[in-house]
Length: 111
Length: 113
Image 1 (cartoon, rainbow over the protein chains, first blue to last red):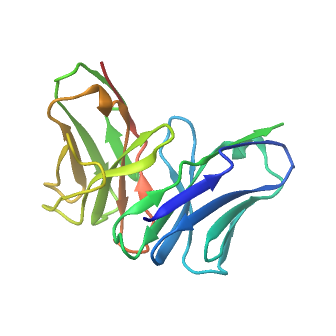
Image 2: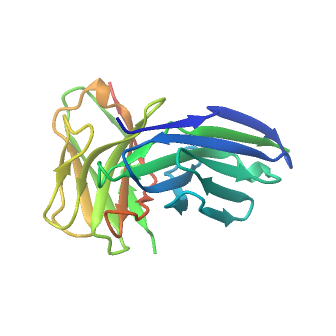
């Protein structure tokens, strides 16, 4: 069965304290791995797509990386405005249209 | 560009009542999706559409119906609401089916009492 697991469930950081969020996946052939940011009361906002192991993408303080079993979202010198829930989703070859979402990591960055 | 919009934003229903959620997108996307989001469950796909006039079942379709009469609109209907349908509903759209990211609307918070 295709599965996505995110860890930790919640993470508290001080402003400027870098860290990483993990997304582990078990799928029957990866078409793509997607990272989203979700603010309270809002819809998920697209951040990155990764397609193959070794690929990396960056946007401001965020950097996403991909291996054959997991993806990391690295947050460098975070600011309070980076506080949100970060969702990971995969699209597997077997399930075609479907995005399989993890339960997310709630990030709180304190000033 | 407004992107993906949803109406209403909030709704309270009594058990057995019906309602329709409206989703609209202005990105000329072929593919549209309805998800529900529940604590600890992640986002789960209810129904989706691969183009105007087409619909298909997703992961949790029971108790819901959908229609895609126009390319830009995707409607989600609840014929007889149940408390188990209390959730936050998100609509999404994408340019293509494979490899393409999905863009989400702001959500509708539905409570069924």
